Length: 147
Image: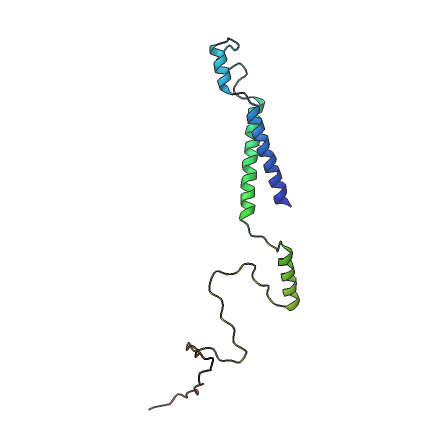
């Protein structure tokens, strides 16, 4: 909501700056009139260097800069809550099951290994045979006391 408001103000400021710059008279017109037609008494004119349009352009440019920085800051922050309908539904379903919600983006690393059933011994690092047969279980060895 706030982001869309700031974005709309940002666009309006951009359009206003373009219109103000196009409505201003260039300094080249004053210099040409000073040398040729005698319409102005000085090279840069009698109106001074800062007009209403140039002051408004400076104010709008400062506001445009502030809204640009604000939008950039808001774009780098991660959202605090789920924003899409699917993310909210997954969060609600996970809360109903009592489990953690699934991650919203897949990881770029290798796929996690399948978890072993409860009570199964962890793998000792020996690969399983290709035919699917289980390797023979070795009996646990008891330490011997050799004196």
